[in-house]
Length: 436
Ligand SMILES: Nc1ncnc2c1ncn2[C@@H]1O[C@H](COP(=O)(O)OP(=O)(O)OP(=O)(O)O)[C@@H](O)[C@H]1O
Ligand SMILES: [Mg+2]
Image 1 (tube, rainbow, N blue to C red):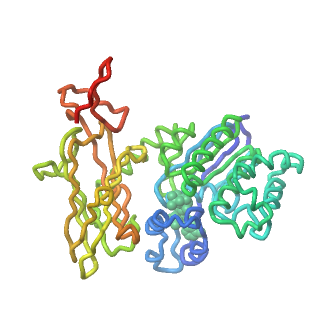
Image 2: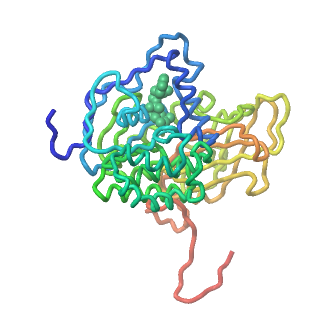
């Protein structure tokens, strides 16, 4: 095969077949990075979503194509975001590119040293210490001892594991493990860096650090492949976006294009499927949010909202218990189209926790002067008992647009859409009294 000089990855007609039942055991033992992080809510939701979940497997022979005839090329210095819903095949693709698993058919060609951060377990030897693993990984990447030593302190500082350098990594907490794994992958000067959702596991500060580091790696002209569900991170980091859908490439373009199409599709899922039919949720299931509507102050359901108006958010629930459930915390997360949380309405902020009837009922949340600017928003619903047991959690329960309105009461149109939250303010060149 002849390469254009700057093509570093070429994927040609790659398909990956899993035989369910037979390989199912592997899947059960297989711990994704997120799952091992004890990121309960998220991973539970994901497990329910996986089409390969236990309940779906009928025979031992069922075939499943995780990737179907996927082809693309990546040029040196591309920072590629790979996005798609749960089970779309993103991790499978990264594993094939990292040569952790073989494609069933098709071929891949890679030019350059690859460092990848996939699931816990890959790359690190549990019995070896942090220090030994750093050198082992460097050696695997073809680096000399001198080069590794040169990078060593930087890596250890990044991972914040100084005290545990001589401890076998099997004794590390999940957080330490991931921090070190990321530090090693990002600092060992690979030509190609492949990262699967490391952002889902860390705290906000670690996430920021990782994004910054990946950006540095990109700026040095290295190639980055990055899987994430965090669209704002994909947009800010990546120059290119590949959207996978059920094992197919649905779009290969700029990261903005891929994110745009992905979000459009995510919206329509919330609209097409009623809440009570959704299985992509987590929590004990004692209570399920079964419907969600937004009503105006006369009780009429709305299909879009206006800034500054008064609304009721209505959550229908079914209670599987035969008794009432007291002290239920209800929380409505309102996220913008990038998945950034802009408002959080929660019963225990205003000491308004609710009691749920046996069988079914409704929960209402009233809000005056809706402070949202023009744009599309999505709602997540979270129900828990006294902040202890998660009863139900469903992301993207609904999506709705805010379109116009007269928040400022001035009659001026031209509501902003480049901000999310509105607040009234007065202006003067002299200090004045703030009236309530
Ligand atoms: N070892 C395996 N055996 C059987 N099926 C598998 C195996 N690994 C993955 N799958 C299935 O292949 C499909 C693609 O999985 P993959 O992990 O690549 O998805 P993903 O896009 O990374 O999803 P997520 O966003 O949840 O991480 C899923 O339906 C998954 O259940
Ligand atoms: Mg994955």
